[in-house]
Length: 226
Image (tube, rainbow, N blue to C red; front, side):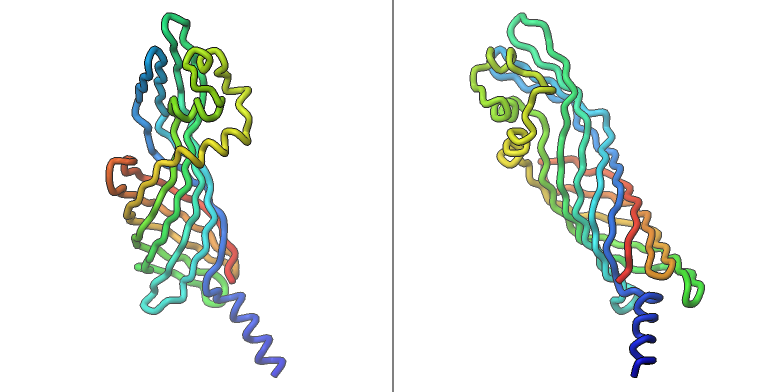
């Protein structure tokens, strides 16, 4: 009985059914130059086209027919170059940021694999799935909420990104979320060494509607098999 129990533990370590991990993210996602005007107040914002972040994921890769399912919760940030003007006052240049959380559910299939029995394995997967996103980009109404100021002249005078309270900023984000959903296709390589896993995934996200643009992305991460 003890030997059988020990064997189950060893098999679980050598052949994990799934796992959890963390990944780094890099996306090519440009926020086009946007000019927003309210009265005499103008906000011009533009990104550099690179979006970075991290995600937490869980996966189960013991489905029939070499199928696997994966869920990702992603957090991404992007630097935004902003320029504020009011009447004839000199422009204020500032570096701000956009913020996005995303959820991805992916069904993938192993199409090619190599293995060293009882030790290591590498596999190529292809797949796709559904996703949803909540994002925030700089806007005049967002600045009004963060600074608690509706008067445009005072808004210009009070604006200083270095003095923005983090708590006020996070609270304001909740009221200015842009929601979007989409589909995605994905190709990736997964390497296993006992219970340790490494992932490299290339993905293209197709967004439904006009809330966001479709974009490519790359994730690199590590996981612990269970």
